Every structure is written in C-alpha cells, then in structure tokens.
Amino acid sequence: MLVILKKEVQNLGDAGDIVRVKPGYGRNYLIPNGLAIPANESNVAELSHQKQMADAIRRKELSAAQELSKAIAETAITIRREAGEDDKLFGSVTNRDVVDALAEREISVDRRAVLLDEPIRAIGLFPVKIRLHREVTAELRVFVMRA
Image (cartoon, rainbow, N blue to C red; front, top):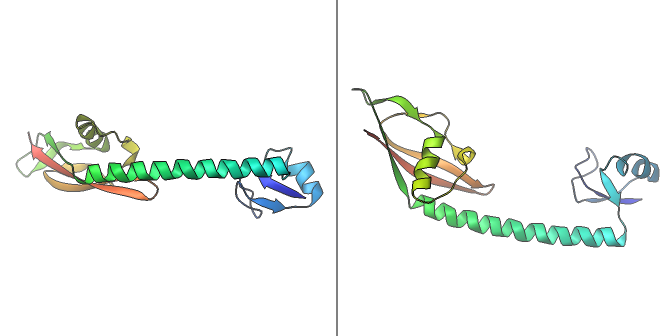
C-alpha cells in the first residue's frame, strides 16, 4: 500500500514522503491517527501542488531576508546608557534594546532573531548577529556610548 505521510514517522519518512507500507499498518495505524493519507492520484497531485507553493513561498522569504540583511549590514545603531568610571554600564543592553533602536530606523526584526550570547554591559562597539532566515544571518554594528 502506498501512503503520503502528513507528519514525520520514525523509521519510515518525513512529511510529504510517499512510502510503501503493509496494508494493515496503513489502514489500522497511519491513516486513523492522521499520520498519512492514501496515495491515490488526486492526493499525489495535491501534494505536488503544495510542494510547488511551499517552494515559491520559501524563495520569496529568502529573497526578502537577503534584502533586509543588506539593509542591516549598512546600518549602525547607537545606544546611550549611564556608565561608571570604568566604562561599565549601570544595567545592560539587551536584544529588546537593539530591536527598539532598529525600529526607530524603520527596520522591523523579531527580538528572538537578535543573537546576543549575553547582554552588553560595557561601552564600545559590538557586532550583533541577527538571524533573519534559516540561511541568512546579518551582522549589525552596535555602538554603546555614555549618556
């Protein structure tokens, strides 16, 4: 029996794969539990169409992320904070501060995309990586200055 997997099934395949299984396994376990659908002509055609649509969406997202990456690479932001005599900040600069500074320049980024290992706690220039897409990471220059 041929089935199209709707979800990943261990030792069988990933979502969207067409696999051959024993008829009892497919009828009694995979299909009733929503893990697969029968691989008839209409379902195979629907799967093909969905894959084409998903590929088109992925290409658009990738090109948008690459354009945003270029804009971020050309941008430098300045964040002002109170600091002590030894250039240590009273508080810290977090990913939320970076996102807010980018929003002032009309660049919209999710705060979870800003990759800070730990908050910035000193004055200086810091490169901050921003993951825009699975394949695209931009580097932003962040200047932390004394207020």
